[in-house]
Each structure stands twice: as structure tokens, then as C-alpha cells.
Image (cartoon, rainbow over all chains, first blue to last red; front, side, top):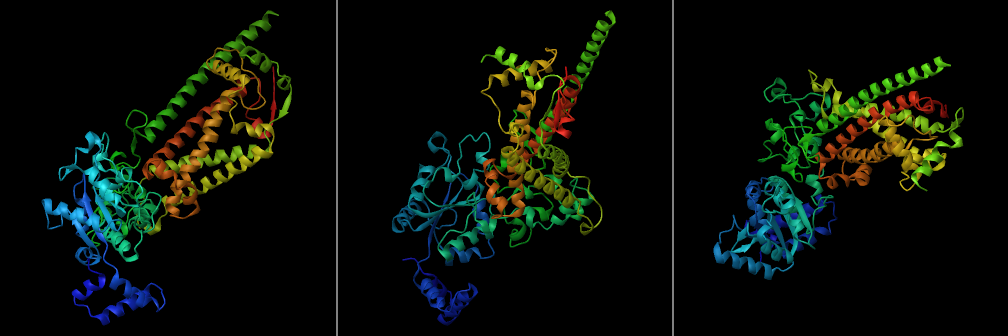
Length: 362
Length: 236
């Protein structure tokens, strides 16, 4: 039997008196009546911690690396106290057949009750042979494990959108997990990697409230992906004032002006970087003087240069941006008009000449 | 009806006999046209400057609001353009038959095709004169349908989708137009399409102004004064 929250708290030396005070305080801070304090206590005493299976497919483990750096809450509290992380290739002690046996056991024991967290995605070309785990294609393991899960978390750009391995021409046909798994709620937590606190925040929310966080149209939690980086950027006043970095080594760069002209993707990227920041809130890319590259947006590798504001599009067979394509069209129209006008004038002159002749003859 | 019969009918339309004057464009249609002119100039200029901003202003950020004003001009003109377009749709319903012309292409009408071919040949200097039309000629009609009606719908949809990003999730702009962004493959791609749309309209404006001036001089009907007074006069 998995430990309950209460068991964990007692094990960590918290008295029952402190525990009950915590429950009353929680009820109050959530705006619930005093009658809810015993209900919260009861839930924490009886509800087993939710088991989590963490699978890794075609990926670079940057999501796990980010996850273990969470400061609020500390990762150790998340994986040792809050949830029961029962299978995680990088973090678990077990290995080989022992680990695979463990996975099978969790799937059977907690059928329909565990959360599946997926880092990376399955490549579908050659029957999935580009990603083999325990002697089997990852796509098979993913489908089987998802079938009995309560909910699925898609960690990072890989699982959510495909990321670099799915960039054109995508030789392995790396595919976002929502195209492979059906009939299960999927929460996308994009980013390359996602912010540590966003990851633990999503997990904590699901465990505390026993439901999915509110999602937007693209299946991302609204609380972290509801606003663009631009909307909460501390350099935003420079944008509104029209003060931009024009070159990486100019005075404006030293003064910390807006990186819009340097191709910063903050205005088109939904993430919490400008509020939560990274490494326990120390900094984030724009604060370090480099524009956002939009790593939490769909297909960010195929959206043109990281350093252009008006990015190249490929719909016209050539790589050119909207200004080049549209400007060329407008210039061609202008030139065509000029030539056409000259020809028309010539024709009219000829016509009036011939009419004059006709009148002259009379 | 074959093409030749259609052509003959066009040439001998009693409505367009020389010396005749017809009331074509009603007040709201003409007003809409000139409001659109202003809106498009403001929208294209401010939109271009949003994508490629002016050189930086020096001094404290709190002393300036240049980008803010440019964006305000863009958003304000966009609201005027949108409201104008909605009122124009209303007028297409209650106005005269010419007010409806912009909203449908008569692709099943042989007369329309005959006119289109004649008009194309006229622009290639293969005809001595074009037919006369009370409303738009078929070539102009096609361009206006694509670059005014269809383009306006696309620009309003992509524009309000981008605007909704600033207004936030759950705003009416987001609820009505937010779906456009994932459909086009993200915010950056939506910006690119909106930007291309601007160039499409700019290209159309160049051709439209040229064609209007040219027809006013060379065809057998008034053009520019018609969009001012609403009356079209035909000549020999």
C-alpha cells in the first residue's frame, strides 16, 4: 500500500496537532468553512498518494534535468512526499528486468488510477524502430501504458509538439503523443525544457485537487501558459517607448532595451518565463540579454530564424519573409502599372492623331 | 446563352447608352469607400512600423510611448475598418442591387465571363474599347471580391486573433477569433499571414487606383466622380 500524505508527514516528524492546524489553515486560506478542516484531514489520512509512471521516448532528458531543479516545491518533496514516482528511468534505483517488472506491477495494481508522464515522443517510421526500450519499440510501450492511465502529462516540446526531432524533414517521423494516444486527457506542458516550477506546479495541482488544471485551446494549463512572455516582460516599457536593441553590442543592449528587433519571440510565445523565471527565479533568457527563441511554441524549429522579427516563410517555394514576398508583388504591380500607363498614353495619342486626320480630310 | 450572344447583349444594353446617367453608389457605399481609404493607409503604415519599428528613441522609457501610439493607431483604425465592414454588409442587404455586387461572384453567368474576357483583352491592348457597365466591370469585380471582401474577412480574423493575445484568454476577441492562431500554426505564423495580407491589399490598391484613373480617361463611362457623387455618366 502506498503511503498517505499523513503517513509521510508523521514520518517527517510533524505532530498530529501541527497536522490538524495545517488542515484548518488550508481550509481557511481556500475560503472554505470550518467544517472543511476535518474533511481535508480525512482526505490526507486516507487517500493514497497518486502513483506516477514517467516514460522517456525520443528525447534528451532536459525535462528531467529541469524537473530535479525545482525550488518551489523542492523536487525531493514532490517525489518523496507528494507523489509516488514509481517508475522513472533516470531517477529510479532499479534497473533491467527488475525495473520492467516494477512497471508491469504498477500498471496492474493501479489500473486506471496512475498518472502517465511522458518525456519525448515516439518515432513512427520503420515500425518505431528508431526508439527501442527494453527490446520493444517505444510507441508500443507508450500506447499500453497510456491505455490504463487516469491522465497523461506531455512533458516538454517533444511530447507536446515534436520538437527538434520532428523538425523538417523529420526522418524518423517523430510524432507528438496526442497523435498516438486517444481517449485520455492529455495535459501539454511545452518548453525545451519546461520551467521546473511549472512542472512540479502542474503535478502538485493534479495531486492536491485530484483533477486536471484548466487547459487552453491547445491543451496547456492556463495558469502557466495563459499569457505571452511579452505581456509580463520587465523590458516591456522599452517596447512601448520604442526603445530597441539594434545590435548585440550597442549601447541599447547594455541599457537593457527591448530585444524585439533582434528577433525575440516573447510576443509570440506563451510561457511563464518572465514571471516564474529559471533556477529558483534567478533569471531567464531575456534578462540575460538574449531574445526568447519561442521553445514552448508548436514547431518552433521550423518557424524561421531565432534572430528575425519578420521571419521567413516557405509557402512560396523560396525562403523569404512577408516583406520580401509582398514587397516584390507590390513593386511588380507598380512597374506593371507604369509600363501599362505608358502604352495606354501612346495608344491614346495615336488614336487622337488618327481622328484628327479623319476630321482634316473632311 | 453562348459567349457571342452574351457579348452582343452587353454591347447593346440600353441602360448604358451614351449620354445617360444612372445613380449607382448610394451614400453609405461611397462613405464606406473613403473611410476604407483612410483606414487602409493608417493600417498599412502603422502595421509596417509594428513589424519593423522606427529607430530607437533616446532617454527614459517613461518619457516615450512611440510604439504604444503606433499600435493604438493600428488598433483604432482596425476597429473603424471592422465596424465599417459590418455596416457595409448590412447595407448590402438593405441597399440597391449594386451594393450587393461586392459580396458575390456570378461565376455561372455567361455574360459575366464574356465581359471578363473582353476586359482582359482590353487591358492587353487587343480591343479598341471595353463594354460599359453600370456597376463594376467583371475584371474589377473579381479583384474587388478577392482583395476587398475576402481579404477584409481574412485580415479581420487574423488581426483580431493577434489582438486577442493582448486582451487575454476569455476576452470576446479570444472567444470569437482565438481559434485562428492554432489553425495557422501558432502566433508567429499568424503574424506572417497578416503581414502578407497587408502586401496583398497594397498591391491591389496600386492596381485599383491605376485602373480607376485609366478607365476614367479611356473607357466610355465615368469612374472617379462616380465614387464621389454616386452618379455614372456614359459617353460615346
